Length: 335
Image (cartoon, rainbow, N blue to C red; front, top):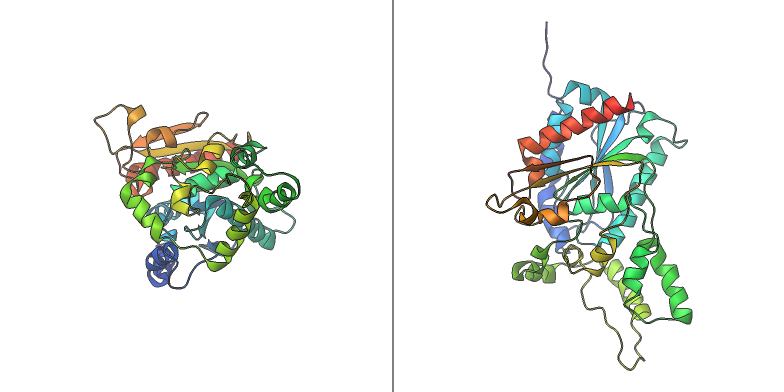
């Protein structure tokens, strides 16, 4: 007799009790129980024989952003038997370089905890899925920086000698990085890889002014500022932008501009999904209301899916079907 089961009831109960929605907004504003570092949540006990799907939410969001996607993935018998879902909950008020480093460390430590030798199926062919700012972070974690980001940022400051050596010591971990070797496929959803002009609008600037960084982060950036800005110069350079996550998503952000064209690892097959909330204009000029198509588009993508949607593209049936298709393709490629 065929039977039915609800494989996401526990997930739904966990989200209902988590208070993520309220906490995510308070964290952005630096209030409440402030989240200072990423947390990795497993939606089931670790299984060494199932591949991992890592999901990264966007700005002022949380694992609740993935409720529809996780429900549909776990409801698909083939996907449920082959994958386990990990969700990363991270502080979206932190600058992109800090979150890039911190999330890498969290994922690496979690993998090492469950599979110290790195020999299990779960430690290979990981799929990384990121929405919005989570998609930008996912691409950074799969890219090789070389000297491109360092040159793009440090070229704006005239520092030499001991200050330069100190700056290298402090900034190298933030501005130089290599791809996570365990990931071989990625899905970028409504990701502003080249930033978004939306972050420069009056409302976004007002919200950015309300974002508060943790005290520990402020202390660190004060030290970095003292390294970069020469107080004794005739016309000392200045940090002309603040360092919040919203500023980091602007198409005017020096970090975004320096990282926009970083090469993604040749081992990673990647896909793009984006929304179009402006159906009356040409695709190249379209936008999901927040992220322009020109920013979300990536050359070399194995596939690109544009769906009629505002920025929360990952909630739409069309996007979820595309994610399921890609995950099935990943199984077939591996077998």
